[in-house]
Image 1: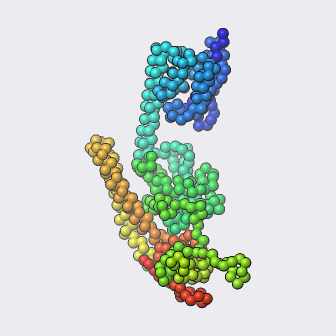
Image 2: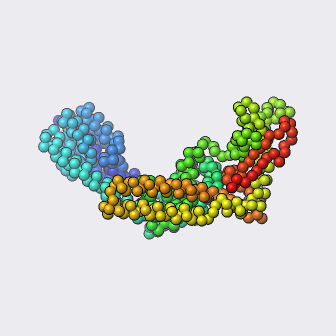
Image 3: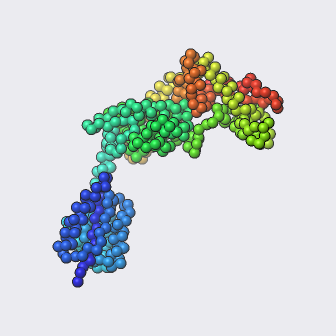
Length: 468
């Protein structure tokens, strides 16, 4: 009578999808089946899937279904650990084999008769040791990752945008990519929207390190990486300094841009690029409400052609001021440029006192030092886990406050390109609308005063005053 058998092969890791491991297993399993005179009716192969990880193994599940349907009475595998590394899976397999009278044969470990108490005991013992080996290996790998992170060592993966990795392990800046990061951060801190930066990078033909176009997620991941400022992280926590990695950003620039990404008020929209200069910035000169753009007029009427205005919402039915967007924008732009040409340097000094930034930077360094000292004290047994948790929570809370203050202090950088009176007008005209809006929000108040109906536009009714 012919004995039907199935073969199961599995390899945990095959990054190149070469299948060399499972092919070798299969050849040895077929040889065993031929030697015993079994008829192999099917082969089930899970490639690059760990039994320990808990991820679904579709071919393994298909094999169990075949056994439950009585298709075969023998399972051939290279070793028992190819079948199971988790006790829960093993018990399911034992129950099925006992019910259907299935015997397991392996190339390396011989026969495993799960229909007998001794066979089941051996299987459980082998399974327990396989589980121990997997857990022990996992612990060693995790410990090595933590240690490497604390020492600032590169832990593998794809090439990070902004750096070049030499064959000898040396790390150097990719100057072109580092410049892209710095410019993008400067634009974001100057008020540019995230959507505008994604569009700009793609329009300029700049690609990610994998040769792809940019999107919001890829931009966020690159811009907010701790290693940009020289920090090493593990599972989202800063654990040390990157060893031998040249930095791309200063710490305060990195923390400031991270704060922008985490600000709920600046979450991504489908298209968050501004169209008008002071929409949502200018206020009504009578009631103080924010004025926004609105379309008026009709395409069918030659006398009342469609146009865009800034409108005061008033009480919901009647507003106070309504002026043409293009007239207001041109007036505000000219007045701000004149203001910067006259008082730009003084405004920057008032906005961004250098000593404040230095104090905040020093405090940030001291706080990170306290975290390192607390971690060392816990490792030496000088403080308990509860004490370490308390110190960490308090210090990180203050670090978050310092980061916010640094982000605010960097607002002065929005004027960095606008302090030379001889060039300020030309530079101002060359700036994007996002940049201009950021400058306006940072240094002036804009009020649009109402006027009589039908009266021509009067620039003097658009008031621009310094607010710093």
